[in-house]
Image (cartoon, each protein chain N blue to C red):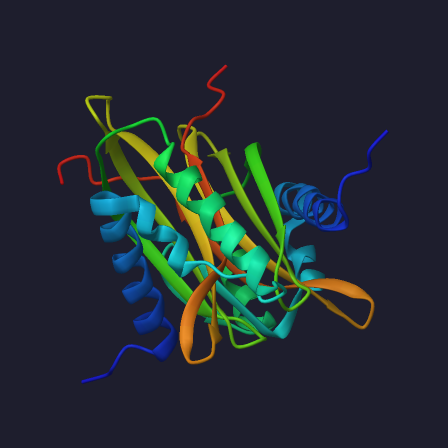
Length: 128
Length: 125
């Protein structure tokens, strides 16, 4: 009965917690970031917990639901965990859209925090 | 006249090089990967594995088109890059893909220590 590797447990644990928190009360996501964290949201950069939380709190929807299609986790050379998530989301009454998100997790004082976070909607230039 | 931050320059240059290599001769991709915990022997073996992994991907020709890319510096002086794009393999329909890389500077060369690729296929049901 093989156990999942440690980095998969940490990564999938984080991912589950992140989206659950995001969908129910995203203000609480602040626990996951530090002052050294970076977020790139649809190409726009935010540095530090405060700036990140300001952005996430001000996103223009009332209700949101994420659904994860796939997730992958790797250990990195510097003992971090890299997680990539592909899924779909529905905000308010908008249509379902695909998204991609990548996290880098680091163990700081016995707690896994998110130092890097990148989010993009899966929108393509179909004309290009 | 602001220069792009260094991590964006390195990240976008790696991304451009990666897909150009992938689309023209993917058997050469092995050289951009590294694991720092390798002996010489296992390094050679690993390159052979990578060579065959890429060579045996089930298409003859492939073209990637990048829709968007993001780059960030990481706490340990690495670079995290995320790419969203589309690809066309042989005569198959165009498909979306997602890919993420971690780049590390080893002996003054930026190499890829982590690479994750997924086709953008969803459970529409």
